[in-house]
Image (cartoon, helix red, strand yellow):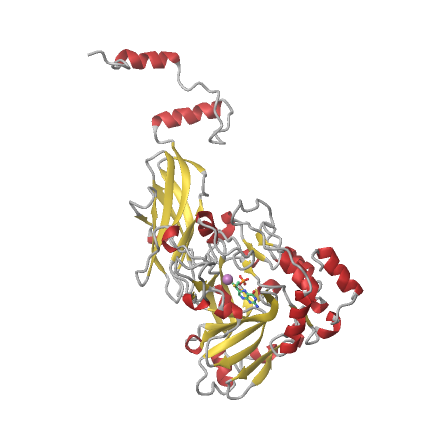
Length: 526
Ligand SMILES: Nc1nc2c(c(=O)[nH]1)N[C@H]1C(S)=C(S)[C@@H](COP(=O)(O)O)O[C@H]1N2
Ligand SMILES: [Mo]
């Protein structure tokens, strides 16, 4: 039994007594497709990989939910996932290192790396809503496996299953405007794990570091995606055969679940395709799709959770029932609150599809000291899935008793499938600790649950409750505060950290005596 990174790497280098030679058994499926192993067509290959994995003892997942979440970047390293790739070996051997290189090449240097491998990362808080369209290097990334490196010249997309005329198309054919009109749409992709950190902070849930990555408010991004509507391409394939109701999408990455291997598979209903809300995209904000976002071709499903927008797409199969692959059938499930490790079954979960209305405060930050003159500037995003859009955003400075609407001109433009960023000057009279809250009403007048606890669930999905942060208000429109802050300034002393006692005199004895001279005594005698 081997259980360390080095020993697994060494075993594969020597290719010792292993019954299967991973370099031969799992050789690359197609030329020009690096890091891709086809599993779905070869059950025997899956069995071989499972047998290899069974020979090793892998470390348990880190228990980051029971202790403090590491204050490091990457937050979690994904050792188990790296080892699984090393153990299966062959074309997967160097995928962890290659994928990390792509992160460093394609993503913004300030990304918060929640998990190094499979790579999961979100933009730093101050940059999430800096622009209503997320720049590509700042768009969050969620991967279930490594990043395949696919040569666009070698790329093909296969249509099979219950399609009338199964076909294989290359990129040039898909991009041929005589065959398919081009479609460009502004779409927000949101992971159903967005804001999971708030659920974790209340109660620990299922603790897998990949499946339950501790996302903050940044697992959401907006881009203009360009490609062709899947509806048109299916028509080109003669449409579907009677009984076909779902389209299964295949991603070229390898996903490990319970020490079994598979490609990344999910499905969407045909009705969604018919509405022209499923795009096969090769461009993101006018640029070729970055490798980390699915190059050369990905799916973008409008208004559904990000999980359905398959990257590194290589096959689309028409089927009768929703996909039974694990990501579709066993993950992205929304359980009732009393369901957990003790009594869980997949069928108790709602299959998460459209995200409910949600919003978040991106500035100020939780626990910030805010020095202001009677109004606090607050910024954030609001989003609703399923083709609904934010109609009204409201902010409260008192924990959710009184709400102030964001003025319409302070909300970014309305789109059917995109978020709106917003900004408000919130009137704040009070000083000291305040709870700032945001909620959104969408065009169907849906709004958000009040507290995290109201909608907590074992999978820690869909944290859509009103987003709450605590800030310490210092209101310089109050005379005493204005003067005191001036004293700090004149003394050259930082006001923060808030909790550090100051040597500046709190009150002169003259002032103190003056007070008692004009007031009742401390203790009354009659
Ligand atoms: N092939 C493949 N497609 C995938 C995934 C994946 O791991 N593999 N992750 C999905 C999930 S859960 C999300 S939230 C989105 C994230 O898209 P992005 O990384 O481009 O932001 O991709 C989806 N598509
Ligand atoms: Mo996701």
